[in-house]
Image (cartoon, rainbow, N blue to C red; front, top):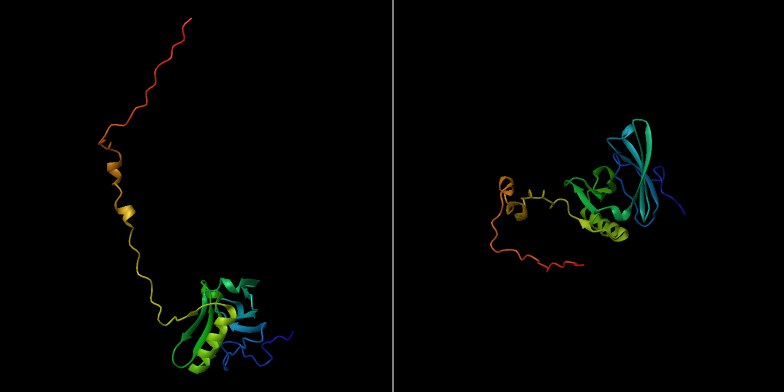
Length: 171
């Protein structure tokens, strides 16, 4: 099984050439820009069912193995000049760039292929707005205030008292 490496025609993300991965020739190994890693570079291995991220932070080398099903989806990010197709994770430091291009048709085609390959939804991050601030539920608002909890509540009806006849043993 052949592997694509950074030296076999794939340019690392952030270099002068655009990143372009072939979804039909997985597994792929390439370098990507990482602002928190030593040397600002991390190595990514992309398989059909998992992603392995290797980087060193302050001299400590680490490998993070993430299942593809743990990713949120495939999203299109960027501006009109150059857009990036990204495999999005809830933790932004684990997101993986897949394609950098300015051609809209190429991006749309690759977006559909990557999304189908990983069985993940296509996310439109340009239309995403921040979530509205949540308000408190009525369950908390309808509760009695703390100082009233010390007071007794008047009973509207009397509680039924269970009474038994007393049995007395006699000699």
